[in-house]
Length: 229
Image 1 (cartoon, rainbow, N blue to C red):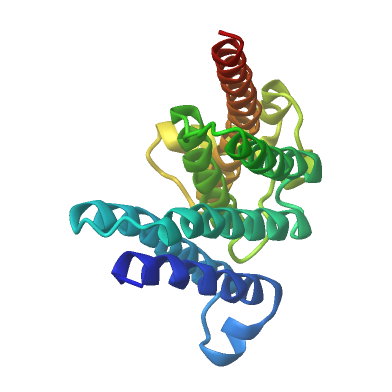
Image 2 (spheres, helix red, strand yellow; image 1 turned 180 degrees about the vertical axis):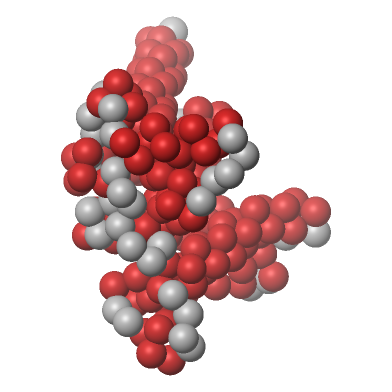
């Protein structure tokens, strides 16, 4: 055990706290803090530990097999818990979350199969892009839902043209150009940014999964050719 691994474990312990804060009136009753505000703070702290643990492990030369195994588990637990709660709160569509989480299971299984054949599937850059857009979507949607549901949340996953026809969206963009944004406008933009980021996360999840399968297929062909030779 070392400091980077302790930070990773701290991220795992923050997951149930995040769920409790979002799904119960705990924060309002005990601390007088709005639940979404506290949830955003917890999620940002957890995300910060994700950045710090890897940086410290490399800087202090404390990279370990335990940390390499635990870090992606902690990331998946944090994002999965947050996305599932967003579905419960009607802030994210279930089908999008199923695609993102299903991709995690499939890629984890593929890596296990690849390991048995001596193939190491490293993380791809598009996978990291997916992770960042997931985090942006979660924070933005939590910002949009603070105090009350976002005014355009009932429009689900309609096309951008349909969003533009919503009166609140038109008002928010007018106020943006007039430099007179209100709290309600911030909620509208948070919702739009969150939904847009979730779209990108879904696309990159599918694209990265394709990349992992393609890499595994090509490496398997190389190994088969080497054995035949």
